[in-house]
Image (cartoon, rainbow, N blue to C red; front, side, top):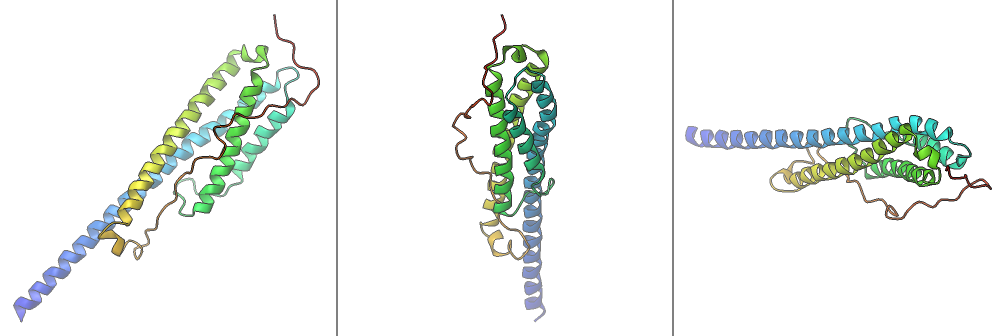
Length: 205
């Protein structure tokens, strides 16, 4: 009887240790997703911080298309209205899609502004604008990289909670699948440029 009891207790201890080890592994994977999300937020914030200086710079260009500046300003404000946790990766796909849509609109507005600026040689010649343009281009590359890393981290986490033995109790312990960033529809299409003034700027000689 005592031997049987010891065997049962031994099995229970082994199971408990397995559960604890699996739980700790899930916590580590979830924290990795959150850390990757924080990096995504950092690069998006870097872009947002560059925009006021960019807007101020292009406003100084004579006859610059005003609707483009308004579009960028409004898109940046729209991003700020999206209520999302900056330090914890979203578990709601719809919430992440809303965030991605707002950021996508801002990215499109910035792309359009940079395309329009090609028609302003005096603006392009300023060191301040060139520096901001280079920083924005670098930031866009960082955003792409960090989003890719985020998706890879989410994939590792989602795979872990759906494989044995964790799939048996991950849901009971509160670990749910996390959504991915999706490719932005129409991102491969160049922004449309339509000037809102009658006279085109005269190229500098």
